[in-house]
Image 1 (tube, rainbow, N blue to C red):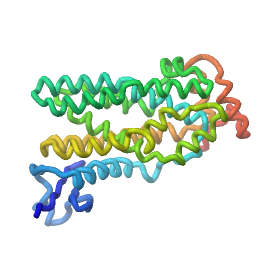
Image 2 (cartoon, rainbow, N blue to C red; image 1 turned 90 degrees about the vertical axis):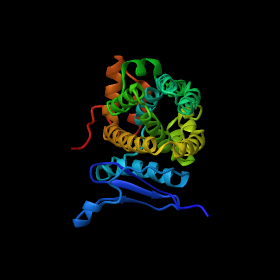
Image 3 (cartoon, rainbow, N blue to C red; image 1 turned 30 degrees about the vertical axis):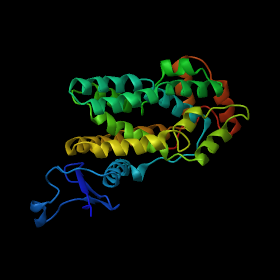
Image 4 (spheres, helix red, strand yellow; image 1 turned 60 degrees about the horizontal axis):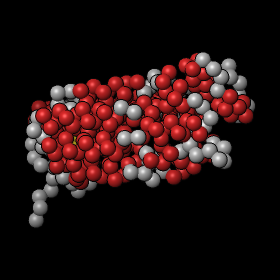
Length: 300
């Protein structure tokens, strides 16, 4: 009979995530006199399992997004907001293959061929995804190449920098946590989410290539499953670092996406037009069709 597996990771100074391969997961916050004998104060050293590892990883994402839960923006989807999302998708994907290969090379140099091989496979699988975002932008009637060359959403900049920094570290194991966070969030997107976007587009426009690829309809689900299995096979110290980075990336992602969602459609269009120095008629037409004016501002 196999023994049950329990894993834990200290996420912040006062919060640890504890998970069992039976499916149980909880946040541990020591308090009171018993805090001096906290059973999860020391780092875990035992082998992992897929059942407990997935709970740690997903628990880290949930905890990261919980930080802004009370102020999370949930506006109605607009065409301008989708254009911003595609520009952000381009910037988070364009350097992914290069970054992953840089991290893979570092692990190869350190004598960790199994990690290097995993990252190399991911780099190949992520190649060309930036081009999907550009094709979608073109399908929407906007100058995609000029927009991505001149504009990066403020909320996306910290996310891109985080990945660049992680892959440049001497021990870039955190890059796996970052990648898991983005792929896990993408895998949650359902056919209904794609249908909502398609409803914003003209009948002939196919502008959901990137979204389809980065949803439950694409390869993200299998990528997530493969990553869970791989992380579960890593030494305890590596698993700890991956989960901690999953949490940090979730915090950055939640704050950044929320920053963009809080903008009005008028503000988005104005930013995009200023970035390329010319009007975007297709967005303006869609905006005015909704009965708005371009000098509108978000409510205080």
